[in-house]
Length: 168
Image 1: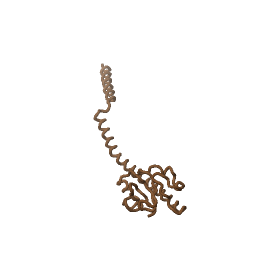
Image 2: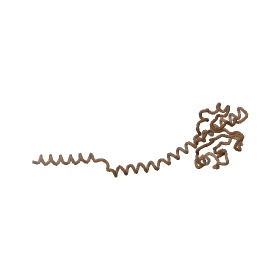
Image 3: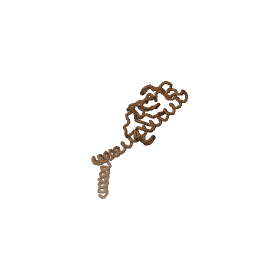
Image 4: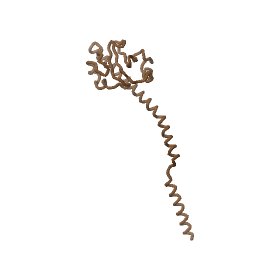
């Protein structure tokens, strides 16, 4: 008789434990996890977006430095700055100093690279003509790399573009 009761009791406990181990997550638990993941994503997305804008601004400044140095070397070797050629078009002779594919591609802040000579109130300069950057993004670049003003300094907002002034 003891064996029968003990056997019945052991069988019942195994059945209960087996039933508990098959129990899944409730709908409420799943919803809480989904809400937490959503909140984390909502916090992370603006940070990622701001990081991307900062990276584009830094890339733009790096390109400005590279192209500015190339224009200065061009000027020293030829006695003059490159001629204006239009947005997205490589100025004659500058292709020896700057890869054409890079110059004709979209700039990191949108628009096309544009070299200007005796135009827009400057003797020589270049920049992003038709850029898509907001004034907030341009001001971030200004405050980090120039004088903090879009109308003065080496970087200037001119006629729908954002230009680096080589010579005035």
